[in-house]
Image (tube, rainbow, N blue to C red):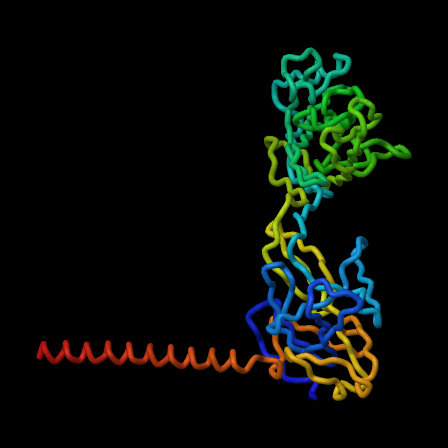
Length: 405
C-alpha cells in the first residue's frame, strides 16, 4: 500500500490531503466510546454533515483532540479515547471584549475661544463634565470644550459608550497646555463608582509638550506613580452590589466580567487647529455566528465567525504504523491494524515523522473514481452541447447572409 501519493487541489477547505506519512483517525459513530473500534484512512474528502460533524465520503467521522480551556490540546499518542468526533456546530457566539482603543485626535491649543467653563469647573465643588452629559442644568455640571466618544465591547458582547471630555485649564499655576479631563460612561447607569459623579471612571489632567505631543509623564488623568503619570488605561471591575464599589465597576445588573482597557494616545495632539477626531479604533467584537471552517498545516481546525473572530475547535492527529503495508483494508476506503502492521502512534502533524496536512487538497489515490468519471462525463456533455450551439448559430448566420445575396 502506498502511503504517499500525488496531492491535487480541491475546492473545499475541508478537503484534506496528507503530504507524508500518517492516517486520519475515523470512527463509524459520532459518539464513539472506548469499546468502539477506530479506523484509519487517507481519504480526506471531508464535509460538514447536518449535525455539524466532519465526515468523509464514506460517512466516517473525523477524530481530533478537543481544544482545552487554555487553548492547548491533550495530544496523547496511544489513548484514542482522548480524541472525539470534530463538530463545528453549536459553538455558541464568539465574543471578543475590547482591550485596546487607538485615539487619533487634535484638541485646539488654547481651548475654545470664549469658553468660560474652566472658571466654573475650578470654583464649584464636585463640578463634573460627566454631570453635564447627564443633565446640563445640574449645579455641578460643566460643559466640556471637546469630547471624544468610543464604543467598547464587554465580556458578554454588549456595547457601551465611553466618553473622554476635555476642558482647557486656564489657571496661571497650571503647566502650559494642560487640560482638565474626565472619562465617563453614557448612560451613567452602566457604571457604579461608589458615590462619585454619576458614570465617572476617572478625572485629572492631560498635558501636552511645547510641540503639541501628548505628555504622559506630566498627565494625571490615569494616576501618578513615583512622580510620573501612569500609562493610559482604566479598569472596570465586576461589582456584586450596586453602590458598594470603592472603584469604578460595571453595574451589578449587567452581570459581566472585568474589563481592562488600554488607550493608545500616541497620536493625540494639541495644535492651533480646531479640535477634531481623525479616528477612534477600538478592538473587540460583538457576538458572531460561524460562517466557515479552516484547517492549517498543523491540523488545527478552527471556526470562522462573521465578526472576523477565529476560534480553535480541535487538532487532527495522524496515526503512523511501523509497517503500514500490513494494515487490513475495510469498507469505506479505510484500514484497521493487524499484528503485521504493528502498534499505532497518534502524532500531531509535522511531528515525529507524521506528515503535513494540506487544506483544499486531496490525495489522488483516495479520490472517488465513480464521482470523478461522472463529473468528467457531465463536463464532456456540456462541452458538446456548447459546441452544437455555436455550430447552429454559425449556420443561421450563413443562411442569413445567403438570403441577402
